[in-house]
Image (cartoon, rainbow, N blue to C red):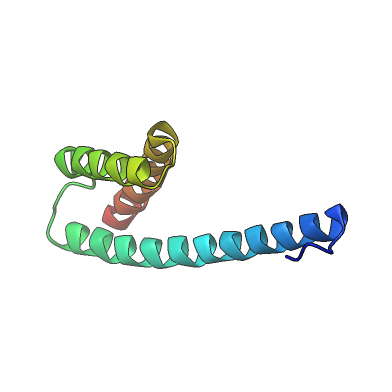
Length: 97
């Protein structure tokens, strides 16, 4: 962005940047779910439970600390991770079936 841009041009540039971050997030989530699918297959193969509450709590605490260090609302980070964990557990349950 430059000083000679109009507010509309600045807005468009900011939105383009946000769109790039959104695309990166989707690609990262896709890769994360590929890995958790592998975990689910391993758990199903060895008759391990689909969820691991101790690890989940450790991960939530870790992400809350990371969020605080990154100036992101830790409550938001926790809600986001809990959503992802619920999806992963569903995938793990499906892998067992």
